[in-house]
Length: 248
Image (cartoon, rainbow, N blue to C red; front, side, top):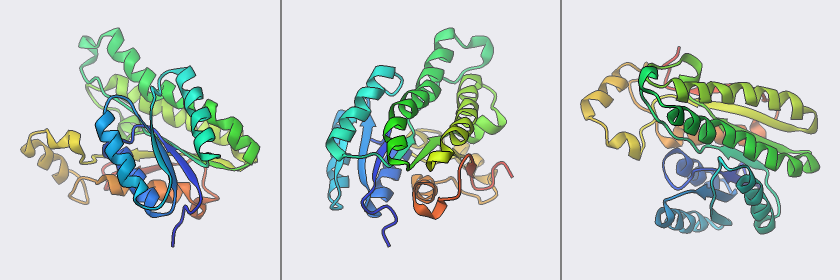
């Protein structure tokens, strides 16, 4: 059963990692996918080709989510190419980890701009078309760090906690128009980024998780699939932890 047949999703930061994993699961469920990337041009072209092989429409857009005007231009371009936007997944994000005593103003501002302001930019840009359609699902990517904090990540934790407050407010504002807004808080997810880390360190993290493994992009994608589809039509304003029991 294709849970997203005929729908169109806009996913930010989907040329690799979690974003790419979400796009792959969505096209398997009949969803047309528009996705953004910033620097990985060749990677994005390969992803576009791979997604389109599933007999759906797929297109990558080079766009900076942290730029207010760029977010509005992106939504206009996607609507022109696809006709509608039913699902938005705000996934783009960065880290600039360091202890607060060493953290520069730029380290703080950049993380807030890309992780949090980008969600304001795109949600504001897309709400008009969703209000008109009286339908939509917005899924914002937070982190377990946004729920519990983490030493050396004050900027990242603040941005991810901000996403939760923003999303709950949007859920209250837009619920009467059948637009849902939910949050996913991933735990330790193994991607290309974690492949570069020391294996002993990674194994230590796995051992501390009740399910004794790191998550896969597919684990996050399946949670997104639930929140994007009609299976979750009565779910809004919620934070879904996908962390193998890390915060239990």
